[in-house]
Image: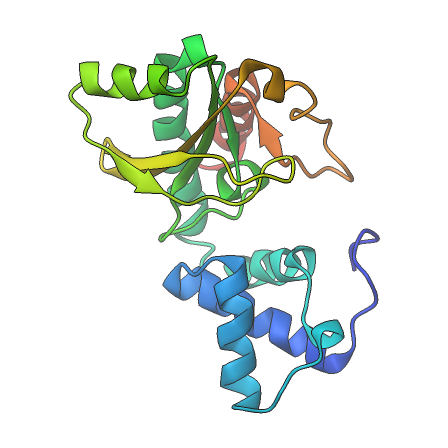
Length: 204
């Protein structure tokens, strides 16, 4: 058991396992997976909030599920996503991009997208860059960053869906934190390149 995770009761652990399976097989986000796992296991019975697993608990179960049932496909898919993401981050280097989510923590799979943050004094700068590259985009919603939900767009790059939020340059400070217990939450272009180097050492 990861020391960062709280003690888990049987129901909480079962919900975490069901949510992890739904994420791996259907590509649900963590919040949706929790809800559907509760419906799947308990029907219309009301679930106490304290019985719902944390994202960290679900992530732990997701790693177990991928190791058991997707070990022949998930590592290759993760590496492919990281390669595509690195190419895009290099193109966006003027906006000091940061990648987060499953591509960084190693749980990205068949249904995963690329999640990026870019930084500019005017968010429209990134929109103009995409237009100049003939890349169409549309509005999107992303989770809160520093307590706020930033404006975001989504588009396809080399066949992969990308969710991109643009924040002010000052907002980048403090977002890149060292790994905790070996787990990295966000990283920049150089950090992603290091993760890919590790992939090359483990994935043939």
